[in-house]
Amino acid sequence: MSISRRMQDYLAGASWIRKMFEQGARLKAQYGEDKVCDFSLGNPDVAPPPAVQRALRELVDKDVPALHGYMPNAGFPFVREAMAVKVSKEQRFSVPMENIVMTCGAAGALNVIFKALLEPGDEVVFPTPFFVEYRFYIENHGGVPRPVPTKSDFSLDLQALERAIGDKTKAVLINSPHNPTGQLYTEAELKGLCRLLEEKTKVLGHPIYLISDEPYRHLVFDGQESPPIFPLYENSIVVSSFSKELSLPGERIGFLALHPDACDKDLLLAGFILANRILGFVNAPALAQRLVAMCAEETVDISIYERRRDLFCEVLKEAGLEFVKPKGAFYIFPKTPIDDVEFCQLLQEELILAVPGRGFGGPGHIRLAFCVDEVFIERAREGFKRAVERAAQRS
Image (cartoon, rainbow, N blue to C red; front, side, top):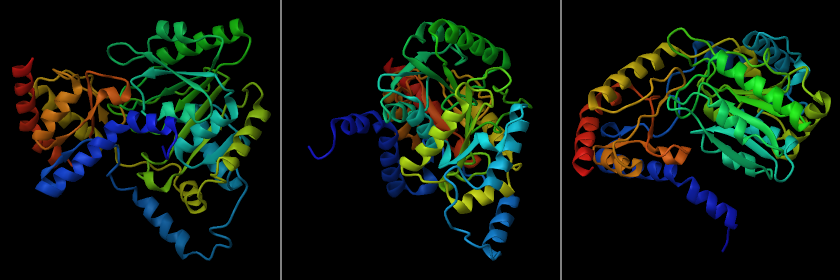
């Protein structure tokens, strides 16, 4: 066989999103792009803020020496300083620029962290459902993924997390606002989690790092906010990107921020910076670093996503589907009346594309991404109704 057994397993495990993409391409070619309601991909369609366009033009027009040149592996010092100001505001905790490492998106940051932290066999605990690539990132570096069930509303189940943490636990990974459910963890939940990690750290005799994956931090609805973790737990790391809040997913620009009082802080930072290099990232993209430093306080128009969320909830409720109303991000994760793969097939017959929840560790659900024009959400209204009616006939 020309590829490794592990890669064969990965191809099988990642097949649901790939299958939806392939099915979508086939349906669009057959019926036309404007006829297919594609809710399968989390690819933000809201335009970047006007300040981003202005900053990009300014950068290109300026005669900046070495505009595209190398810089320290952790990033331009002035960019890290801008991110330190941003993180300090968001976390309500003073973070120096030395604790910032610019990365190739949040995915790059997670791989850097796991490369630096994990010994073979070390476990990373995370709630399920989960972003499908977490497994891959952890196993990339010899780690063992430990998904843990959440409550029925996708909030944290602290008792389940406590049972999952053991001698080999190196880190707990959380994502809030959450992909694929849209759940937002409350301050009370996070305090409970941090108390648990403090207790476990004392019992086990080694630090358990809390990694908070926050690319949707500013995509929250109904006037809510994403609670910070730095005031709650010293051994914590924040990961973020500008893919969602600035609609720059293809630019692959993000960062990690280490708590100033983390155990072995200097050694960790040195490990992160070296990992950034030896994983082949070398450094985050130079032009994108300059761009986000100029636009660190900007966000897309969140009201667009909130309006779509409300419309989608109306459509799903009218169809008779059960769901937890998303508090953030741009996903909704309704229950399916029959097997999730079968229900996705029924939806495809209505020219509606969704991803089976089992691809995210949540069988019996589907993930719907509402980073699409409202016309497609409205167009899918009758199709959802028909699919639910046909599912009822099968069950």
